[in-house]
Image (cartoon, rainbow over all chains, first blue to last red):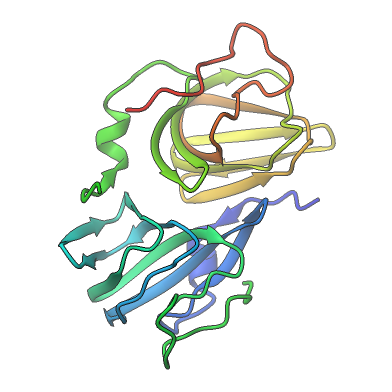
Length: 121
Length: 121
C-alpha cells in the first residue's frame, strides 16, 4: 500500500491549467480532485450525485438558480444532486472536489469545458 | 436547501473534546467530520470502508503495522479498508475525516474511546 501523505501544495505545483480536475486520492469509489479555476464556468448539474467543494486557496462563488454561496479558503459547500450551479472565481482559486469516480466536471451540460475524468497527479 | 458555506474555523470553535468526531456535512451517504485529537488512539480497523484523514491544523501520525505516515496541515491520507491503524498526535491536531455515515471511530476495536457517530455541529 501507499505509505505516503498527500500534500496539497506539492500536488498543486504539478499543473497550471484551469477547470481541469486532477485526481490525488481515492476512497472507496470516490475521488478527491484538485482543480484551479478562474473566470466563469458553465451552468450544469450532476443528476446522480452530490458534489463537494473545499476551497484551499483563494475565493470563489457557486451561483445557484436561487442564490449564491461565497467560499474562501477553509470553507466547503455541498451542491446537492440535481441542483444547477455555476462556479465563478475572479482571481485564481484552488480547490478540492470530492465526488464519485467518473463524475464529469460539466455534468449534464457537456461542452468545450468538459475535462477528462481520469487524470491522476 | 442550505445556502451557506461551512467554515472549518467556526465549526472547530464549537467544541473542545478530543477523539469525538462531529459531523459538519453530508455528501450522498458520506459524512465529513471534524475531530480534535491529542495523545494516542487505539489500534483499530474499518472492515467495510476506506477512511480519509485531512489535517487542518497541527501534526499527527498514523501508525500502521508495517510503518507510519506523518501528516501536517495541508496533507491527507487514505487508510485502506481493513488496514489496522493507530492515530497519534503529540500536540493537539485538528482534522477532517471523510467516511460513510455510521462509521464508528474505533472501528472493529470498540472500547471506552468509542464516540457517537451522529453528532452534528
